[in-house]
Length: 202
Image (cartoon, rainbow, N blue to C red):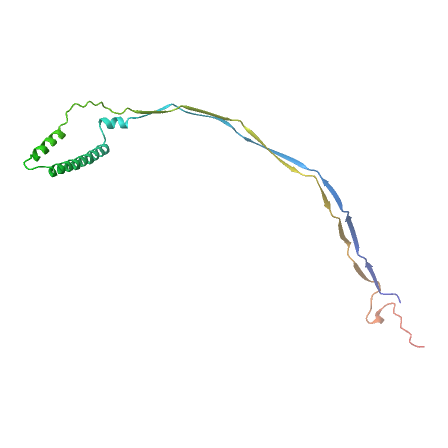
């Protein structure tokens, strides 16, 4: 009796690709950036300056209120000192006075002599001159040349290691093929045109 089923298998197919490790040499590169700083010319001058101060000269002609108050205060202090000295002298005279002596007459004579001031003074105004000062003239010249700046960027030489690689690719998957190769099956078997009864007798 022939087999009714035919079974065939298709094996798996794998493709392997390898890449060897390598050491590569990288060359160095250099870059340069150039920048420019602009200079310039600057000139600064200041003219001759004359400073004239006439404060003291004007005060000697027409004194200010503050100067007048200061002068009057000094004169008041001087008057107080003089009055104190006068009272002291008069007290000493009264202590030394004898009976019948005219003390009041002496006081009147001293007062008249003291208050008598002949108007013979000669004065010049203004008493002070002007204070003159000056600042010298200046001339400053500043010149600055342009500047070039060079910036170098250098990458050094070196070696680069590239590791190896293994790549697997499945080109054919495994398969199993089952094929029926027998003839038709009749039910009941006697309906087969080529049916032959089985002889079971011995």
